Length: 117
Image (cartoon, rainbow, N blue to C red; front, side, top):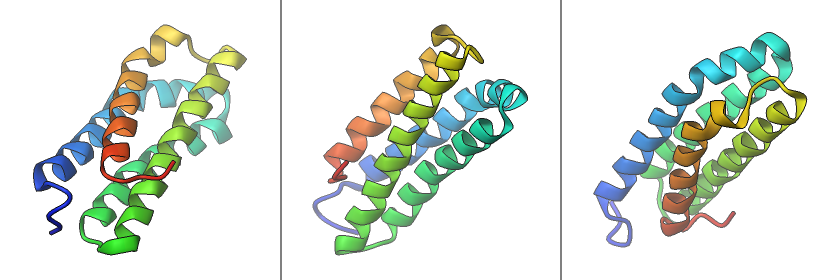
């Protein structure tokens, strides 16, 4: 463990990422019914956020920061994909609001952990 990253912060960001997956799961399923590729891309990106955070927790130095940055990039990808789904009319802004709030929290937490995106 690194003195610069409190263990409680690392654990919390993973828990919020998992909460985002659970919150957005029904939205992703609805998007997937309209556009299989977009739904799958969102599913993969959401999984990537959590998996990169988990990997970063056990990495050191530059690898650790790289994994947090990858998670931040995937987080941004989810946000963009949700906007695309809204633009296509697959879901509404209201449908994704709770998930977007969690994604905002994740982005802020990853920034504090040193993510460079």
